Image (cartoon, rainbow, N blue to C red; front, side):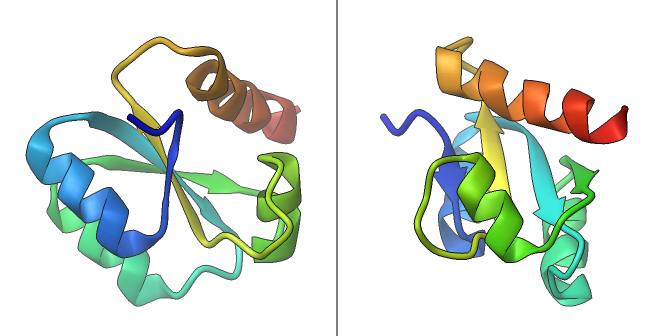
Length: 89
């Protein structure tokens, strides 16, 4: 299984499978994507950076609008939570 999940379709599939506990959204993420995730009953944490910055923070060379945090307590999931905490400081 992926260490974290990116992209709205993949995140929605993982939510339905019960493996996502929260989602982080870039500040320029389309509102419709955030609303769709919230309809699934999952919290969406704001990331105070755009999609390019979020992609860079998680080690991707491309923009990322949404990042799903999985139930598994793996190092990358903790990293996503840490990014959120660092971003809020």
